[in-house]
Amino acid sequence: MKIFLPLFVFILAVSLSACVSLSTYEEMQSQRDSLQHSVDSLKNAVASMQARIDNLTGENSTLKNQTAQKDKQIADLQNQTDTLKDRIRLLENDLHISSQNYEQSKSKNSAEIKKLLANLEVLQKDVAQRELKLKDYEVALAVRDSTLAAIQRDLIGREQRVGDLERRLAVRDSTLNALKAKLNDALLGFTNSGLSINIINGRVYVSLSNQLLFTTGKADIDKRGKEALLGLARVLNTQDDLAILVEGHTDNQAVFNLGAIKDNWDLSVVRATEVIRYLVNEGKVDPRKITASGRSEYFPIDPANTSEARAKNRRTEIILIPKLSELFEILGK
Image 1 (tube, rainbow, N blue to C red):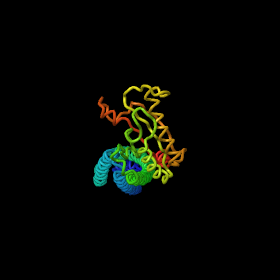
Image 2 (cartoon, rainbow, N blue to C red):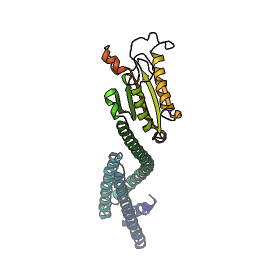
Image 3 (cartoon, one colour):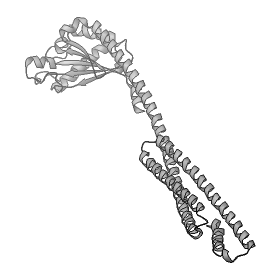
């Protein structure tokens, strides 16, 4: 507002031009030139503001590329900035027209310039507020980028651990398949006598029917069963990283006249213990790797109440469990 104080003086002087001297007129002419200089300064200020607005438009475009979440807000800012540019162009046009009509309507131009200055001040404040908003967006984007980078690093680490786990599982599966093949070769002659070998959930199950191992209601191992256990022991003794679980299973018929054996729980445990004793004593299996377990009648293969089903359920399962400490360590991470 201080820039246009000479304008007001000049306007007042012109309005009294009919009664002023030549020196006064020259002074007024000088003031008019000063006012023209002020108008030119205003144009330069508007041009500077135009350049700043163009810079803000570029920054808005950059922000739109950086984040999809801020697209709508930045688009709104761009539209508003374009509106500001249009308003500024209108102001520039108004200033140009005001300059051309300056001599004819000095008092009116003075009022218009004051209004334009007020509008310009409002626009400058608006632009300053938008610059603050843009800075806030930049900070938010920087935080988001930092968070995304941390997440990506974590995902890369997880993918590496998953890859390591998959490789170790593949090695484990390959080892189990090789072990199954060895057992099939070693026990080939017993597959028709109630012996089966399967891989279930990362474990090798060697199932021996009681027909092969025991007489009904007894816990003494038959000759044929001993031969099968010795063949199994020869394979087990080549494996260093296995835990061995021997599970005894019975049918659902009650136990009678078996001395110290009171029920199917006792019978299943005693049979598992007899198998372990033979594997350790005769087969030379490391006793630290082997465990006995009795399941009684409660994990049948066939739940039907027939003689054939009961024959299937009377069995001893030797479960070969690979040591998974390395896998558990990866999973823990």
